[in-house]
Image (cartoon, rainbow, N blue to C red; front, side, top):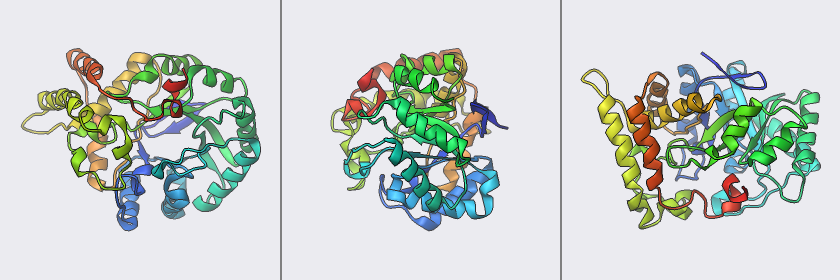
Length: 333
């Protein structure tokens, strides 16, 4: 089963977010990470997402190990545009035409592949008109180095300007039960323009699974700096998790247990249908068992009552999804 994401790009209905395989949420074992990637492809998840900044190139090199024998099975997405190291709070951006070419060449080398299926602008560079950046990306398509173009954390107006230069296959932004700001303008615009949506952090960086204890986060865990995970906010946000857990309990039976993660993903997939555009979430995990769990969301059907309850849960969220609003699309809308 595949989904037409946008611009003719066919991908699996669920993707895999590679950032989880870097130390942003604590230590990561490369051997286990590669085994998890292989299990994902074995299970039917062939849309693999990475970025040049994840592990400062190490994530692309890890995925290159997967691609050695399985390149034809994978729809490969990577990104450029973040010149700093977000894992340490360095949020520099660069997206001038020269850097577009430089970054693509470096990613192709690290990934040990001749072509990138989906190449994203990771963050907008305020010093460079988006038309110039997308124009340079379009040249990579013409040269056969890239097949499709994507944009990450853009506003509706930025997306409108970009598609006038070259077709855009997908927008990637944070989107989940507790991060719905993109529904105001970015999602409707993407739907109108025929652009697919790739939600990152669809499980609220793990919070919506009900298994995250903020007091136990590792010292280097990026969530320690996020407003929703600080004291007070994280306690208040448990009310959202309680609704997700309750719905999972309603759907569970003596034959099968439905998990909060599956409910959160099923809600996103249902949102795509309700809002009229293809939605392919990219949850990340270090454990192969979570792959099978996440795939269970594809066949899960939520009732109108359950969808309404989950919709309303978002209203109880405390704290913004970024400590720097301009870093994400809602801060520039």
